[in-house]
Image (cartoon, rainbow, N blue to C red; front, side):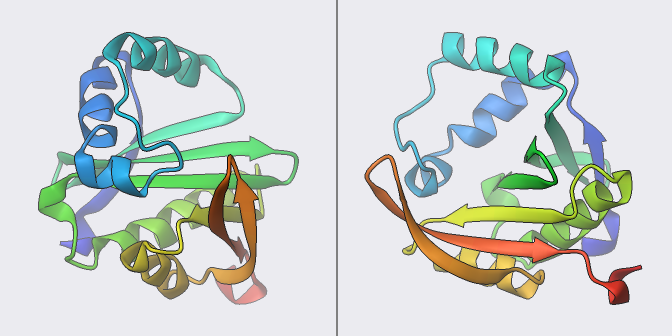
Length: 160
């Protein structure tokens, strides 16, 4: 399955899929904001995401079927990554592979050589996936009264 992983830029007709994936109760529970996302708010956010030059919103496809979403928010020479998978694709080792491939794909664009992941400390599956994809824990931070682990990934010479 991991060999069938592909990314493509999100399109306007992906709005409902992205909303469904991000509103999954398990995804919400591990997000910085745990509240359900109203459709109207999502529509405005999604339109902005497609137009914003510093945001890269990719649909993860497995065997040509939508499986999840990867988002990068670029700021200077760094980008913050966010990943969400549909329930059917979780727990199968796909997260590590897609994180690794997505980071290399973004680095290949030259837009960011350092990628940051913010993970809730109680989200053991995500921490493990990021660590297996080459991320290293840097520190614990507080954001919006929430403790988060900050992981970093940097392209190395071995990656080239």
